[in-house]
Length: 288
Image 1: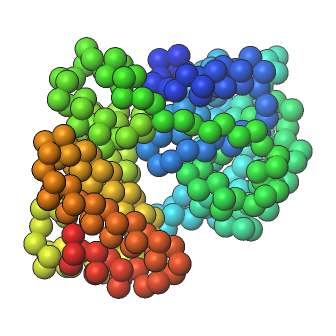
Image 2 (image 1 turned 180 degrees about the vertical axis):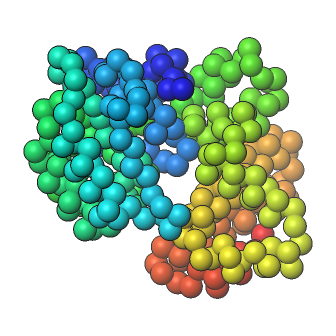
């Protein structure tokens, strides 16, 4: 079930921008923000508000395959979808949602560009992206960007006050660090949220011996998206833990976690520069 836009936990500036789009829709929207910010949920809520509800008939959702890739065949689904006739008299009667648009191949992006340039008059197109720089400049020039901002701790506490204990909210908020989607997934123990699952896996890795950590390197290194989420999760846990030990004035623990965070950041930088993922993960897991 798609949540109502007004019921979502949103930064005030994000809320204002979204309501402007409800009042004056544009046909091409790029929704950006870090992993865990709830872009897909927000996009669906926005589209439901504009269209008056969502169904299989009026929404086509495009997602990546198991290899985290959106190829040309997915764009062909879009072309087939827009050929169908819509029913009704509303200005906008259907929508296309491309989740994690940065996973589109260059060929797929160029194919989508043709639809963005001349979209059917009754169709809305929303693309979500955590790494918008991976999208072609020509794609970005034809859409209105909505950047999802992080929510405040005070907002989170107020929003969940009657649903969870103060300690549960505090722990989820520390790891979420302003990411409303991730915070929600952690509190509800969601098993279909990639970053929330990565957080659980990262907690396990941090409690394991170096030998057990190393045994998972080979399989993890094969999936760059999973590596990216894992490093994000480790960094989130590190920052949350460092904040807690700092409040307890545990200087040595703060210094130890600071070194771990520097190592995680360094690992991410080297992997982004195409240094061997397996080599960098091995070094990280030996020194966490």
